[in-house]
Image (cartoon, rainbow, N blue to C red):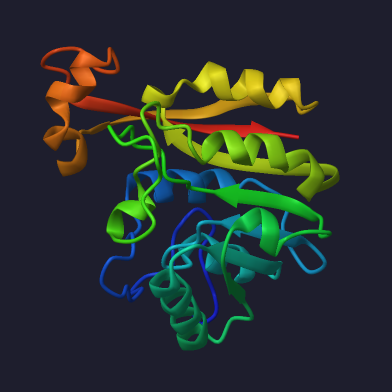
Length: 226
């Protein structure tokens, strides 16, 4: 396999990640499998919202798509650029808020693994590794913005692929997307063991009614809309 080739349904191996950058985990791998079933190739314009290491963006670029990746973290932007250079893949990685950095542009496919972990603080963090996962009391601080913005970013026939926790309400995401004119459905579900962030918030999650006592598995879902 050449340095630029990627196997469908897999993520690039050996990605580097600067301190504080979210490394690919079960949610990223699940989204990569969903992305593998989409029609990508030369002439396909792809946007990744919240690129992290650039794993999903590189997956798409390795199949010939033209990819723009956006992240609010400078560490993530530098990480994704370095990973693209190491693989000699063309990747446009920009820093900032996805809505402002993509103003006036449209894409054939949007892919996102956004922050979705419910957090006690209403305001989204502005620094630190928590930016990659904390998303307000209901975990929807970024998800809802993506739902609202997606129609303006998608070309006719374009597709949105987004992964998030079942704690955030999969049906709520489907309904939000329907409200803005997109037909959406859950295409994948998987249960994974709770990670350290959820375990550290168990008491609060139970108090909020977001988790049952002794619950140990988190459901992840992929939403596809277009």
